[in-house]
Amino acid sequence: MSKNLLNLKQSIFILISFFVSTTLVSQKKQNVLFIGVDDMRPLINSYGYPQMKTPNLDKLASEGVQFNQAYTNIAVCGASRASILTGVRGSKSRFVKYYTRADEDLPKAITLAKLFKQNGYTTASIGKIYHEWRDNFDEWDIYRNFREQRDYQSKKTLRMIEKRKESNPNQPNNYIGPAWEYADVEDDAYTDGKLTDFAIKTLGNFKDSQDPFFLAVGYVSPHLPFIQPKKYGEMYNDSDLTISREKTIPRNAHNRAFHNWEELRNGYLDIPKKGPVSLETEKELIKSYYASVSYLDALVGKLIKSLDDLGLRDNTTIVFWSDHGFFLGEHGFWCKHHTFQEAIHVPLIISAPNMTKNEKTDALVEYVDIYPTLSELAGIEPPDYIHGESLVPILKDPSQKFKSEIYSRYQMREVVQDLDYSYHEIMAYDKYYKDRNGNNTPSPDSNERVVAKMLFDMRTDKLQSIDISKEPRYKDVVEKYSEKLLDMRKITNESIVIK
Ligand SMILES: [Ca+2]
Image (tube, rainbow, N blue to C red; front, side, top):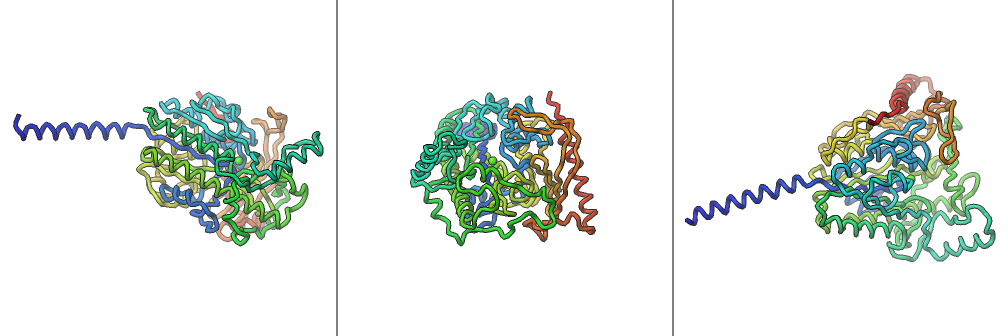
């Protein structure tokens, strides 16, 4: 064989090999690392909070698109998670409570994990993804619970709880402890540290598998109690803390705007049963929340580093979300369960192969949009009944306009918000049924009426401190946004037919 012919044959062979290998690469389905966190408002350095020590989330944001104006559709845990995982909005009777189960409220839904499983993916749920562990349990190939929120580690705390139990063994809630602690332990001592290690091990197993994966990792930080190794508390001083100056419901607002944050009052020691917390407690709560965010940040960093080290990053989409926001003393409120900004505004970062990197967008987006986004990125057709819209156009061009407004809710509270106004209505219903926990939930066929309205100018009053809904000059604005809420109510209250 002549040398030229040999070279030609070799060249053809190299060309074919290259063609085959690139085709295989492009055919390899994209993995998903779905990172959910609990009760986290977007208190991340890259979101414009210079006091926050969040180097890993900042890095993730620089490796993808950070959504500055992302909103949860429901400001409570189980309901929000059910909505995110089904791509369907909540209504007066669907996705209502913290213990909502998607498989009860929307039994035949093709959830996000189910959709990926049906398309050849290995699905794994590690930590708290749905609120109830049984919810849609069959859709996971791999399942590990890791969801102990009251996972106290400090000896002082444990002694305190024990003493309280001994002093009165019959008192209700004798397991409750302080709202914060800083234990002298390593990162892997708490639930979130342990689940990170397990998720890293799981990623290692996925590396050699031929199947693509949908790995959902659900952290309990920064949910109450704010517990973490003590080095994270040492990252913050009093001068770093943002203390709200608004300690009451908005001026001119209906008294139904009030929120009594029972979750903190009734669930933790040394929190008053009535009235505000002391300034000292306020500072401790805010500082330990920041510390919890920094602890979470370190763990997420460790998880993503392992994805990088395993060489999986180029073919994996990472999405970072939290189920809803959290009040840190604004309006004198704590926890969530409201339609004010602190409860509904949430972080969202998406880092996807071949999409924009290191960009921030002010496009208004909702968590219901996560479902169709991940479907489109993976080239899977989503079901036709879902309410969200794919964010892929924004991942390609973060300057794109998207939705004209967002909608969120918590039980009888509903809100429609854009960059100009935030308009809220509080509803009353005439028919209820008892849910599985014996609590009242509005019946799907109940009638409803508006009992209170609030309007805030988001250009001049971002803190939502003055309700302007009753001012005559805003009559048309109130009517316009009320109409929007009414239209959305019609859509969400319509029953969803799944074939
Ligand atoms: Ca939550």
